[in-house]
Length: 125
Image (cartoon, rainbow, N blue to C red; front, side, top):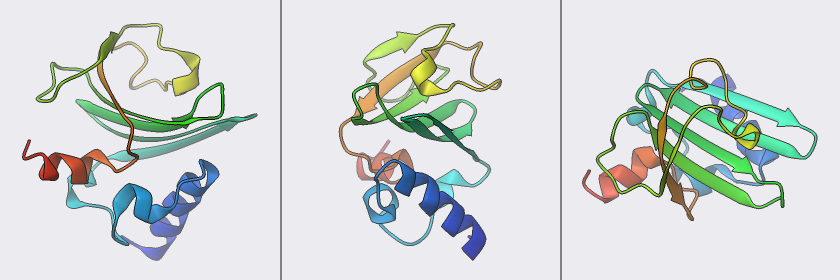
């Protein structure tokens, strides 16, 4: 990953109050994320960071109470347990964008902010 890209993503996660090692462990993005689009939204006290490549969408965000949250979502039935299914219209706190807005998403909420690209290897999925 180029230094500019690393700096940009580090800044996105800093806006959420998350340090790079909390999300990615090492000073690089796992290969799992090759081809993913990264998006960042800030609107008042709401902030979110998105990693997206169909069928997966990950979002780290601050909820209405300012708590850090992390969802791993899949628009197909995922290979992991999920907590709920979100259908359109998606909640505004997720800052949905055009590629995700009209889809149904299986949602796994994680308490740890560690990215799915690392977590899935640890779980052997």
